[in-house]
Every structure is written in C-alpha cells, then in structure tokens.
Image 1 (cartoon, rainbow, N blue to C red):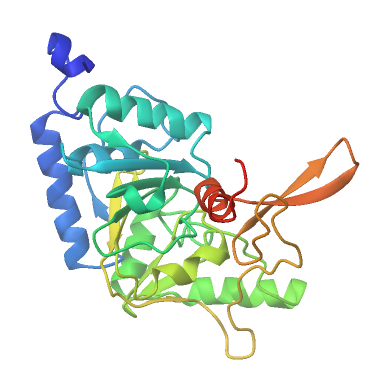
Image 2 (cartoon, rainbow, N blue to C red):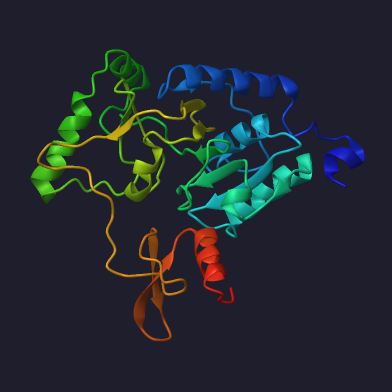
Length: 286
C-alpha cells in the first residue's frame, strides 16, 4: 500500500489539485504555441532544485492510475536521479513502472531520448536545467523576452559563426539550439546532438519542464524542429567508429568508458533498455 493510501498525508501524485491544474493549463498554452516558454508557479518538492523538479512537476500533474512510468537519467534506468524520482512517484501514486521503453506511457528523462522509437500514445518529459537558448549571448531576461517576441536571433547566429572562425566547426555538443515551427528558438535540454533529429516531425508529445527557472515549453506531435546550421556548415550528429561491447550495436548513442583492467577504452550503449533488448533478442544473458 502506498503512502498516500495508508495515512492520507499526501494528495494523489503529491501535488495539490490546484497546482496540478495550473501546470496543466501551462501545458495547454505551450502546446498551442510550440517552443514558447510559458511561466508557471513552480512548487517545492522533496528534492533539490537542479535535480529535475520541473520535469517531476509535469509528470505528477499528468500521470493517472492507468499510466506506466519509465524514468531514465542519461539513458540509464538505475542512476540515483532516476531511482529517486521513480520512488517518489510510486510512493504517491501506485502507478506501474517499467524499464522497457515500449511499455511506458510517460517517459521522464534527463539528457537523453530513448534509442527505441517512441509512439504517438507516449509522452516524453524532459528535465530542463536552463530553458533560455539566448542566455549565453544575453544575460538579461527582459531583453531575451523581447528578442523572442521580435524573432531576433542574430546574436545566436553570430555566436555560431564565431565558433566556426575559432575552431573550424560548430563545437556545441549538447543543448544544440533549434527552431520550432520556424518561429521560436529552443534549447532541447542537454541531450546530445544525436537525439535532436528525433524531435523533428515526431509522432509523440515532448514536454520540457524547468523548475528552477519556472518555465514550461512543448513540442507537439508532427512539429517541425530544425537545428541551426549554415549552408556550408550543416548540422551533424556524433559519429562513432566503434560498437557497443555488450550488444554490438553501432546504431545507438555510445558512452566512452575506460577499462582499468585492460587499460583501454570501451564503448557501451547509453540507453540501457535498448542494450538489454538487443541482448535478449540475441539470446544472451543480461
């Protein structure tokens, strides 16, 4: 029996109903204006800010008794962040959880989009540490709001150009800026460039929650998401000349690991569920 059933100390899904209604209204506005950062009254949660409070509030406001939740942190189901969030949700909702991507109806993630393709009946919730894509070129919140209103993104284009002048390429490895519906520039959270193309015309709904910055934004299904690029310096994802040492995949995003026993580098799938599935299909022990 969950904590909220046993002693009535917590409302279903922890947040009070008024808070959840406000967050849902913010989500509806974000869906109506893809890429626009909608302010909301971020609530206090029993975890530190910076550990995904925005994403958790979205999940707690949307989850229902018939949902199945999956929580990952940089592709892993077993990290401290993922386990702690999963424990909070299960303690206050009794919803079923899973580590299998295909079984989930809500997937809350930090820094990754699953390598298995998501369906139209699934919702991806991404935790956002800093939602403002113009922050690196303009520190003032008042000015960045005006720049978004005027669609003035020249400073970001200049920043990318300076990157090319200094390094011969665009060196942004994650949080790569993109245009949504040719109108608003967004930060897609610190996902690797590998994951950014998955958002373009995706069949699933993607929600972004920044608890500390008190912003929510969304990419509805079948929405155009185009990374910033120049004609002579097109956007490119990471390339790997290696394969996962566990499942043999060369088509997934790989983490570089150091094998201290053999004294050499090895590569492993960042998405642990994807890696396990491939090993099961090959009949190998996990």
